[in-house]
Length: 250
Image: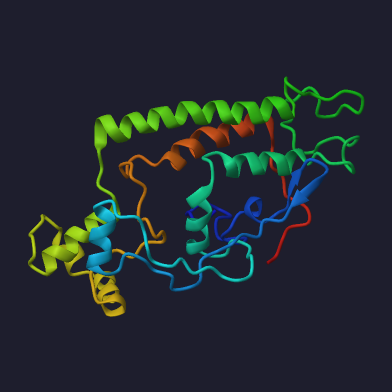
């Protein structure tokens, strides 16, 4: 998890889920979750000229500076790059593969991460596949994602049409500079965060993680949030998640 909650246990353990750090089983091997991540301070669209060009559809032209060494996810900037190219249920598919743990060393073992109601949980001679097994689990993750995204995109385009933060940052910058006046709340115009942004970049624009700026679809609701809301309960119907052994400590 990224953000801490108020309930018992929320302040224990790392901020980043082990499902984003542990190796993901794949065929007869696995891949380490070390990714190409942006270098610190790689803030984009901080000048008004660049911001305006991107708003008008000019292709991005700034260099995107990456860390030379693949890293475990360890910051908000790294997470932003992870969701830059993921397909929407990739995190949940990876989590499912980690819990399924199918590889040459475990193929004959009982899986401790099956839901207690799974009829194959304690069996040493039978294994579920398209019913209560790996085929069933990953299939349902894809199915609920499709339904969730259709619902989210309907809300984005036909109901809310919510402005992207990057675009609203442009309105803030132009309002303060008296270029154009927009109805920006006084609490935002007087915020310390806005003054710190100006100190660092010389503008009041919202720094972006991506050279092309925000995605071109409206900001609300979040497609990733819709997918997470559907994928996690779906996964819990098939897989329980007791304490994971051999935790990764980057």
